[in-house]
Amino acid sequence: MIYVVPTPIGNLDDITYRAVKILQSVDGILAEDTRTTGILLQHLGIKKPLQSYHAFNEHHIITHVIKRVQAGETLALVSDAGTPAISDPGFLLIREALKADIKIECLPGATAFVPALVDSGLPCDKFVFEGFLPHKKGRQTRLQFLAMEERTIVLYESPHRLQKTLEQLATFLGADRPASVSREISKMYEETRRGTLAELVASFQASPAKGEIVIVVGGNEKPKRKNDREDEEEDE
Image (tube, rainbow, N blue to C red; front, side, top):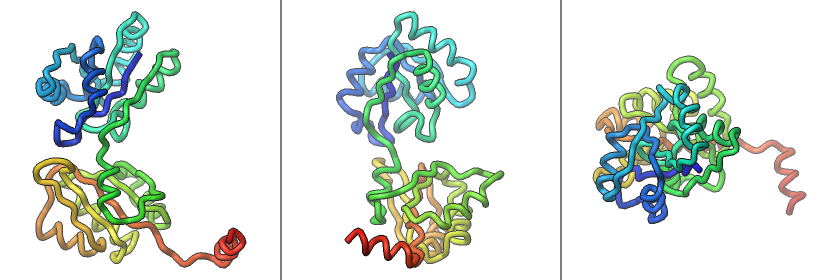
């Protein structure tokens, strides 16, 4: 059995009772950064063997991890913050474990984009989560594609790339597109700034951001085509 255990994205008290029970019960914990997870475990009063599992070694240790579980161990997979496999390592292990008929149980819990989306004030009945944009190859192509997206768009970004990303979003999606930027969610300096993309470009140029970033951008509200309106009228 492998448990996928979300961990707090900021405030350590955000962890669930069930997650604590699982971390207490497993034979070992696969951690993106053993130092970060060690701090959490110390806060919770839990002592368990830790093994590094991150983007740079996951291809090399998956077979070893699978063999551990097949030999009878129960493991928990955690990332530094949030839910593993959401813009963090985990997908490859989960896929290979399922191929090996190993049971996977994913606990519900913290993830940064949900509170940022809700707090943005933008429509959240339908949205698309893009994670991190490509840094170089395919970046402009992706931005051109997103320019036509009608659902609310959610992105992750690092603070040192935020200004460039906001400027490019304004260029490709339109400077007047409504958006929000949330940082340090659930931490002491949590902040959400809202406005048009142009306003946010100016805001962060004047006062740069630090910490983990979530960008939320309103979808393309292009006029509906005649056929779309006719379809809606028929539904009524």
